[in-house]
Length: 158
Image (cartoon, rainbow, N blue to C red; front, side):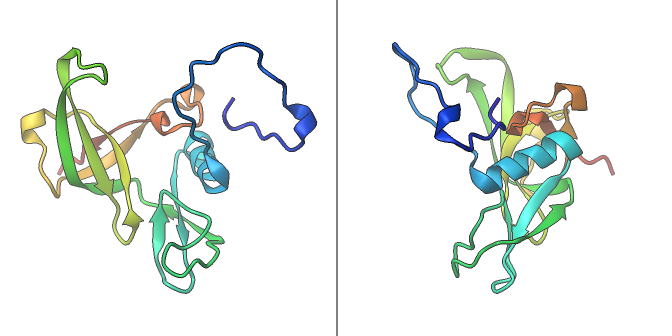
């Protein structure tokens, strides 16, 4: 499981043969905590720089401006706004999708950064920059500790 930590070299095992890996991404210290909070507590967390007063989402372990350690973590509201978006009509292999998928950069008030994720419960032609959205999580029993624990963001009904 990606959230399990290896703390000693003796815990690793060799793999003999070919592994069709084209790239590898590790959560890192901040990423592990970020995804664990989504999985276990259903919340988005950000890391705050005491010197620059910036709150980063996704969180980091150091500030990109002053390189200070980001030790303070804050819960971020699960509501944001669509900063930009695209409507995909093909999958990653170029195959036509039965239904288009809307992917947006969701930004949160007072936060540096944001999350790229799917929008749901909205027709593609109704999506707009500045649209208020809220996070919709998978049921807790189905969460695995990844960004996909967030099912999608949906427009907030006024």
